[in-house]
Image (cartoon, rainbow, N blue to C red; front, side, top):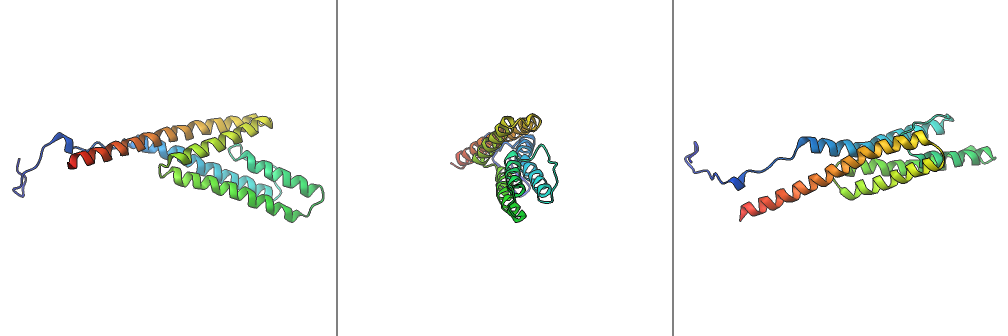
Amino acid sequence: MENIFNSTEETNSTSIQPTLDPALLAQLRSGANWFYWIAGLSVVNSLIFAFGGKVSFIAGLGLTQIVDGIFDAIVTAGAPSAVRAVAIVISFVVIAMFALFGYYANKAITWVFILGIAIYALDALLLLVLGAYFAAGFHAFALIYIIRGFIACRAVKQFNAQASVGAFGAQR
């Protein structure tokens, strides 16, 4: 077959490249972005603590709330209020880790999903042990979407591997 430049086109069926399903990418991003939500709401929880508030979001990390509570008890027992800064630093390290999970999970790095899921599941178990059933239930809800993101991540990785093998095979 000739095109407008008078050269022949190859009409080989192997030259057709499959495309990645946009819904799969959306599912990956949705799961990965939950890490950002967790980090963001945990930041708000820690700021509420830092300014003396007693409320918190259920989607935030239980670990940061426990650290805040421990340091609040230490201050209540007579330690200087500057000790709260240590709690804030510890909380922000954990929060930064979840923000990084979101960043790298959005880049389709599967082990980041696995580590984030494991840590957030442990956080949910911690909340269960402490009797915060509603917060643990919300963790389970979020974990479902994060796990769906992980499954989509694996599918994207598999698609990319097959596409690269297909492209390599087509070059032969």
